[in-house]
Image (tube, rainbow, N blue to C red; front, side, top):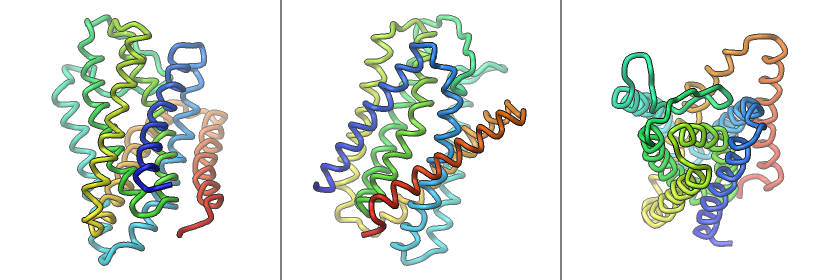
Length: 263
């Protein structure tokens, strides 16, 4: 299988799979399972960042200090981007634009699609960036591409559930919500294909993109997902969260082992 084929299949299949699973959760009584998916997604993101992407970035780079600085820059960048979204779309103490914590109740009044469309614009850009990250990972190594795609799918599912809930509360039908999310996911393929051709002649940029990818995963896990877990401090919930995070990390390690190590 060629690298470009791998990028397209991972982007397309990942989008369709995450949206289909999210739709099943959002449109059924299984939505209460989503907090468990969040814990698993945290483990998958951190596992992919620390066990796969960062070691490979440090292996490819000619300057470890610059790569480490890029990770720090990436974390700050995602913090500022999230702040910009909040400044632009939030008013008073009520924020419509911020992606909700999956599994929590979202009692938005019907706003004639306003908050739903804001979510779709942000999600489309996010998917486009995911495509660039997947392409950079596949160009570095086929195995790291597969692991990166799996980690992205893992965290996309609970995020897509939140998107579905916002669209439904914004007045969209289930069919329209599904089609909008599916259309948004195609941005992953576009980002992946563009990045493939762009990075073909710019291999020295691959460690930079891998560092940004790791920063994205670390930031999403630590800043966006983990705080939601602290809302359930009881011992049983904490043990469940730790177990599921461990399973997420373990699944990345197992995928790496099954793929036979670095080429």
